[in-house]
Amino acid sequence: MELASLKLEVVDRIALVTISREQFLNALNSEILEELRAVLAALQREEQVGGVILTGAGDHAFVAGADVQEMSGFNSLQARDFSRRFQSLLDLIETLGKPVVAAINGFALGGGCELALACHLRVASQGASLGQPEAKLGIIPGAGGTQRLPRLVGEGRALEMLLLGEPVSAEEAYRIGLVNHVVAQADLIPVCRELLGRMLKNGPLALRYSMEAVHNGVEMSLEEGLLLESTLFGMCFATEDGQEGMRAFLEKRPARFQGK
Image (tube, rainbow, N blue to C red; front, side, top):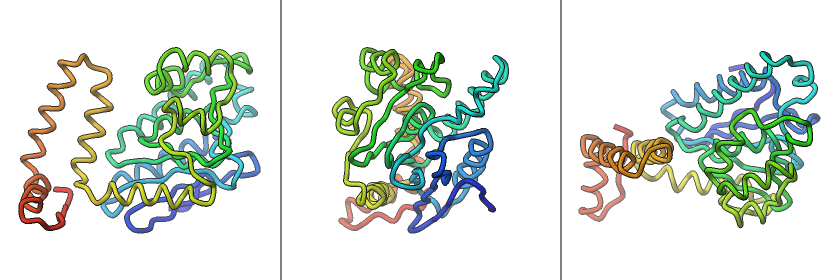
């Protein structure tokens, strides 16, 4: 696949996807959104890829936001269409069926923060910052910021970030549960690889069902969520991986999962 604004590297079943628009702090425009969608859809189908790291080129920005130059020319209908296309991309990330880790190497603002929110884990470098500054532009987030942020950090902290429009440091983001880890810049990608490597030793279907249970369950009542969990739990027992994992445990040997 020939890529214009992305770089793709696959090593040891981990795909590293880098948004490569460093001169614009990796700001997202319509073309990058579509290219990112195509790459992620291909990785979803690729059996040799078990997980994805998503990052930005350079040391200054993960993604500094959506491209304001492009958005400034939108009318109302064009803005809504852009929002829905961006939301659809983030839905793809969230439901990819494979763990996606955001390696936040600097600014993750506006659409960049929303992109990180859709990933399953977020690892930030020291000195990184995350925020939703849209109110300073007279608009609101359009790619899930008003929905995923409060689900992650709570309504009060989310509203403070949205209404002030001011970013929080990586350390504060960790304190409020917005990121999972804060590491030195030089360790960012190695830590993400190490985390994904540990995940990929587990059953791929178990990973997929766990993410499905959490993603869908948070929208349900507790009773409905527990029913979903029981259904997926039962499905595990119909898989070769489920039988292999328990057999390996009893035989005191590493499991050999096949994703079946």
